[in-house]
Amino acid sequence: MEAVLFYILSAVTLIGTLMAITARQAVRAVVYLVTSFFSLALIFYLLGAPLVAAFEVIIYAGAIMVLFLFVIMMLDLGHPESLTFPRAADWWPTIILLAIIVGSVGVIAVTREPATAPGFVDITVRQFSETLFKRYGVAVEIISMQLLFALVGALYLGRRR
Image 1 (tube, rainbow, N blue to C red):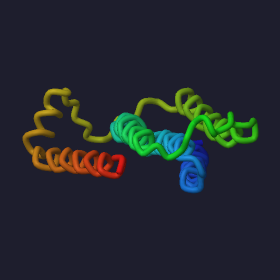
Image 2: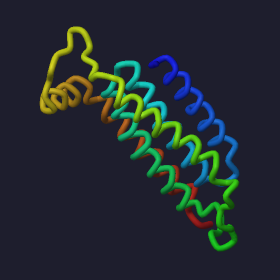
Image 3: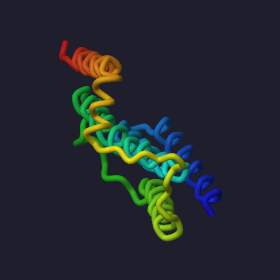
Image 4: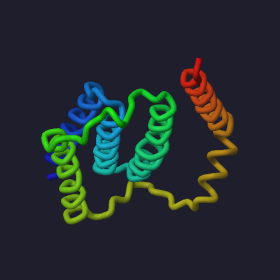
């Protein structure tokens, strides 16, 4: 059963990503990319990495997509008054992909027991954060600087001439 869910979610991830690449409107591309991130998080969960799945949802589907939407709104790529309300034919790909993801979550919730990795060590959030910021502090700072550079670049691209 897990192999079937894996292949279904892999197909949803590929379709969502392809639709994000080929979308004509930037906001629709972001919606398809969020759908792809959610299905990828479920794939990570199926592979026995629930922490990576949670990070996928929190960091990528949450924070990075908010940053993308901020850049899209700041660049003012289109005028909302000239856009028409999406037709029913425009909604069906998103509805189908989301229905597959929700159905997969239901199947996983019903059939799968909580996974425990062999040699699993239970650590607290405090121990995790101390390890992250003491041992990998430089990497965290470098990533934060990259995000700052991306924000400055977005502001530079979005400024009025």
